[in-house]
Image (tube, rainbow, N blue to C red; front, side):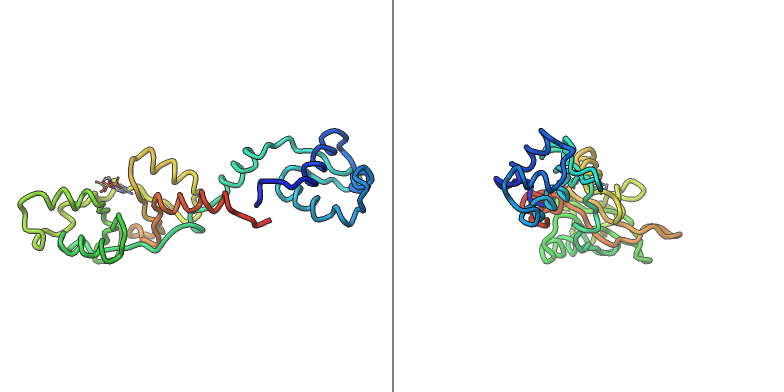
Length: 211
Ligand code: ADP
């Protein structure tokens, strides 16, 4: 959605603010244009939420500012539209192998699963660094010794709102969350939401021309 309006759309908005409810016909008259010429602009203003159209009454101004409209849109974004593929390791792999996986897969957070592929824990960059500066043998320590484990993992679901997830990332001071599916046995990891996904959504929203 383009939040920036062109000159004619601004004029229409002003006319509706001053004279609404007003028919498309009357708006066209005031601008010395045909109803057909105005149709795309009216459609854009209506879809963007600036105007509302009522049959036989006409257009009226919703009173929403650009910022409110942007916030409305932001609050509709869902996890499933922005999530990435999760990178998981088994809880028995060594810290050394987890570090290698983190580099090869180019992620900052690994999710740890048990033998049944259910979520068991989370490994962040600093979890691995902390272990690396100790004197331990990294190839012989399994990740389940050092990971943050269930039930202390903050998870989200594919239908959650992205804004709520962003809020929880900040509140919990973490970089990522597994997107999970609940089963009788536990959580299946189906995706990953990180601060990067949130940043992408933020930029997409600003650039969006969907209208
Ligand atoms: P880093 O510590 O590398 O900057 P984070 O801020 O994501 O990365 O992690 C901080 C701590 O929180 C780490 O110990 C990590 O294991 C843990 N952690 C990361 N993500 C989660 C999560 N979704 N739920 C619970 N704990 C997490």
